[in-house]
Amino acid sequence: MIAPSILSADFARLADELAAIHGADWVHVDVMDAHFVPNLTLGLPIVESLLKVTDIPMDCHLMIEDPDRWAIAYAEAGAHNVTVHIEAAKDPIKLARDLRAAGSKAGLSIKPGTPIEPYLDVLKEYDTLLVMSVEPGFGGQSFIAHVLDKVRTVRNLVDTGHLNLLVEIDGGINSDTIEQAAEAGVDCFVAGSAVYGAADPARAIEALRTQAVSANHRFA
Ligand code: DX5
Ligand code: ZN
Image (cartoon, rainbow, N blue to C red):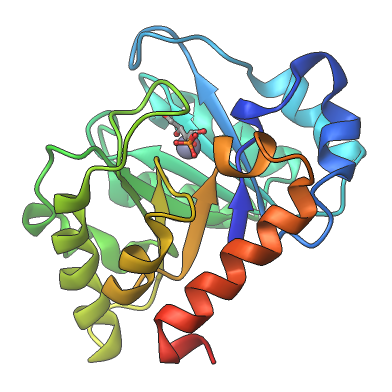
């Protein structure tokens, strides 16, 4: 699956920018609060407006403090998947259950420097794991390859029936990096600058998908 990130889109033309990524599996929306991360982007009112103008399932990545308080509203608004950060969530198990009860999938994200091992039990409550392959906050950064160890750990637990979730990767995914991520076992690739920086975003999506499929026979 390919999930273009509108962080790299033109924010004055978001409806057009959503139309430009037809063929995308999910659209990734980065919510930043200038506290959990240094950057500030958009919040619930804009998400609600975007939901009205697209049929592409929305993947909301909340880089915010106190997701226990704020995340549920994104599920209630109609986001397909709502992802919170393990570094910010106070009660991640309750939060996952509340998100699912509110009608969305529950996603958990982890920064590059945070180990996954303490959270493997928590992941039983989640539908997606978003492995950050850059420090959250900005698009267009370089891919941090060592996070693929976390992907491999979780891929193995999924393939052996110990976990049941999709593995997403976010940050620095482009034609140079997607194959190693696919080989490590990623299911869903977030790509911001690689899609919206391309002359034809829809073609860029298909090119990334073709590369991922050729790099991992699981997708064939
Ligand atoms: C970074 C965001 C990413 C960002 C990725 O904090 O979570 O979703 O849009 O952008 P690229 O693909 O350009 O690294
Ligand atoms: Zn993101």
